Image (tube, rainbow, N blue to C red; front, side, top):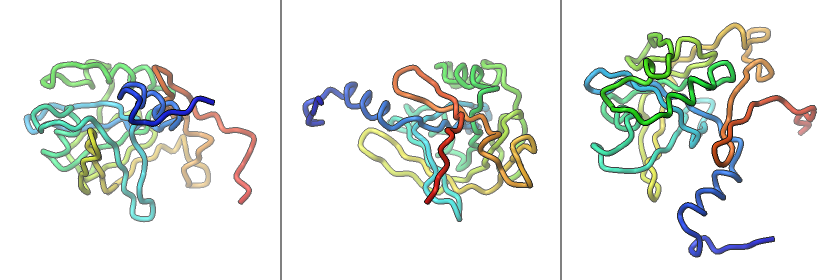
Length: 197
């Protein structure tokens, strides 16, 4: 087995190890609107929930001065809201296309051919065909080394009837897409093993 002191690895080597070891990673496909009214859509695999009874989700992006932040965190800081759409197999290619670097005056919804829909409690748009969307307001942010961690209070949810069983969201019907290390995606086909304890 190879062992390494993190301080002896390059930032690229460290990132590759962590991103490959912490996998599969769920993808938050986040819809926002800029202060200038441009709708933005981008996937983030540095994402998870941090509270469930009072739902809070979090994603991180590279830290920078506000003018140099990625569009999504900058829009969240300016408007205080964002929509987390669950990335699924049916929309995987569109989700991947929305990760392209385009000018902030352009919308990834148009670029990737994604139909948008209105949210109920926030002005940010959601993906019309997403099977699950969580409308969020900004809970707070935290700088962690070279990353900006953004947390959102989930205020409203949209869940398709197609992924429900007996009125409950059903993991066996929700074909989530996740990220692996490198350029790879994965699906969420359940194993035969079920939790026993």
